[in-house]
Amino acid sequence: MNTNTAPHPFVGMWVTADGHIRQELLPNGRYDEARGNRQSAYTGSYTVTGDHIDYVDDTGFTATGDVRDGVLFHEHLVLYREDAG
Image (cartoon, rainbow, N blue to C red; front, side, top):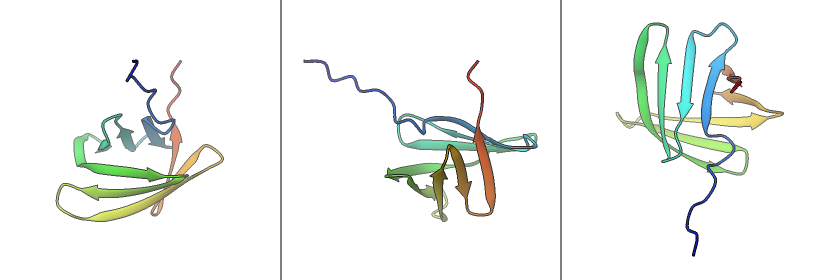
């Protein structure tokens, strides 16, 4: 039996238009967010329900996001998929 499943379509790198904030949604339900030159500024876990994302960072802070028309609206941020090619 094949137990491999494709990663969720939201998995990957999301960036603000100016590239200052880079949030990577990892296939294991974790995220890693860089801010400017500060790598791993925020890390934690996330869960996806439909187009909604619930975040819990490693300090216990919570946040939410929604993907609409391929754009991630994460609290006050607007992030776009980083081009894979």
